[in-house]
Length: 87
Image (cartoon, rainbow, N blue to C red; front, side, top):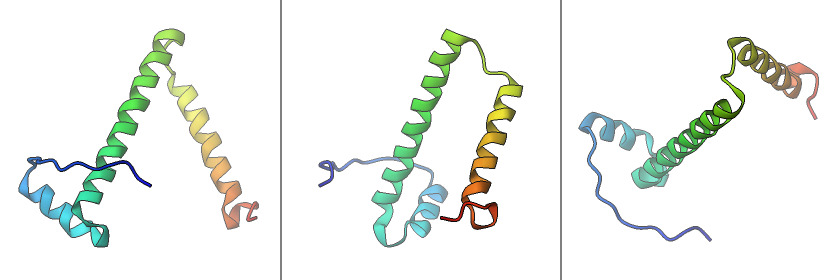
């Protein structure tokens, strides 16, 4: 069961609303907008976590970011059919 819903009135630029309507598919505009807002909340939460971690441990260096991206890239390659771990 999902959380109860509420009805809200929002204002947005017409071109964005039309593009969202065109892409919303069978689930409809409300579900499309709700998913977009949920993703933004996740991003905001992650940014907040990063700020807290950097305040406690110092800023993340470009080298650390590159190393972590390389690890992620390698892990993804191992999980793809061409990457050797196709289970």
